[in-house]
Length: 155
Image (cartoon, rainbow, N blue to C red; front, side, top):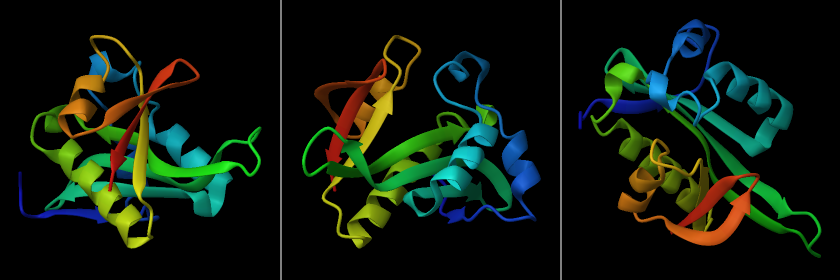
């Protein structure tokens, strides 16, 4: 993994590059495109934390965390959770440690904010990212969100 990895906010100067980011074609069914994530980030305001992943000057990925959102509004009081909402790594950047960097960056941000657990959901199946998340230490909670598996990592 490169030592020049960093996160940057989405800005007017880099938004076109963000919108052009494409995952590997076999992953397109597993993660929403960046354009949808940016629309959701706008709609969800301060509870969304979108960031671009750069390796030097090259845009290699996009992540978006969710911060302190009600998980189950039927519970009183509603349980609040934070975690990784989206992770898009460019097709050309697969297998280079960018995904691990992204998860670690979200973990570090949540730790800085005093959060104890990092949640993530993923599409189940052979082409889904479940094995990737399990290798990073996530454990399944037994919950399902929509049809996605819910995982958690202690930060």
